[in-house]
Image 1 (cartoon, one colour):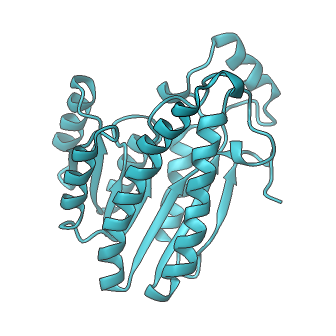
Image 2: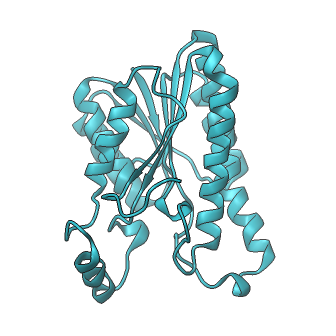
Length: 242
């Protein structure tokens, strides 16, 4: 299958690309066009013959629009919405300027909407497709302190997934959500002392890894089209969907 993963040069996105490519899929992935990420992208392309890396900056409208035009040429079967711009933890709600909420929405939801619309145009025509959305367990119950922007945007994406599930099932297009617990990556680094405490409090005494969540993404890639509208927490059962 032809699979697009947004944000494929680090963390969960990179782990997903490296897992799915083993199944001989054609993998496309986006990356932020910085020197460091470009070097990783080029190395991955050199390592895997069926991987194509394409730069896109979610903070620049022209860059996102140009990327979407390329998406329309890739005959996409699976879209993994993985990218988030910013950090999950910022500050207390009352300290966040109202304009920051709009900015976070423009940098995260609008690019994701545009990319998903481009992929859906293909999926509708071929009467087949899978959309896999990476959410967060922070939308279950009470989110951690400082998660206002992150949790709000992820909750919005999860509700969009409900809409896609409702509107595109008749085109044989599925939309599922994965809600991972905290993963120690460059995206969500915490102080070493906090990390140790999180590990001690964890029922398995070890935190979730990107590689483990990548296997869940692979499950949805491989699953029957009967698997649709699922919201799957990956958190050792510490929080469950109501």
